[in-house]
Length: 141
Image (cartoon, rainbow, N blue to C red; front, side, top):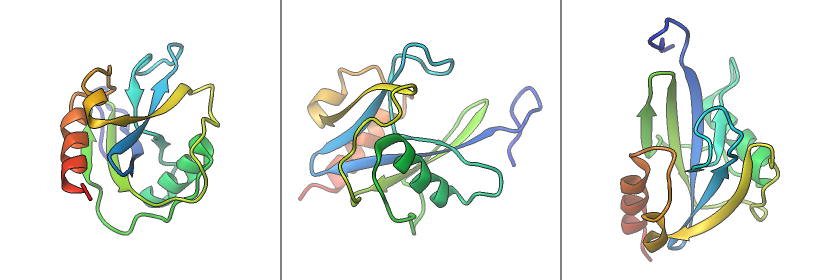
């Protein structure tokens, strides 16, 4: 378990980079959110105590987007370490259902974005844009 600068345990976060062809799905965090308000972010959330990260990811995507995904088998495509959190991000390219915003208290919008549109967005983390571009370039049909 990682410890944050104030001595408390870091939050364990899981997130999904949902890719559909040349688009990625992002969620707009509500301006009322305490952490990272009014920015575009990846769907995901906190890992519960004793919960494996992949299981947490599948649960979070069901809770936030109403979709079912297989628990990821491979390693995350990226990890982000902040002062108060450690986040693992998996590329998800297959799911059951159509993503909809079933957590309007957390996100006020969800949308698909092409690579051209991503640079115009206010993103939750500085590393996201490079990761999006890399994943989209590596997975072009």
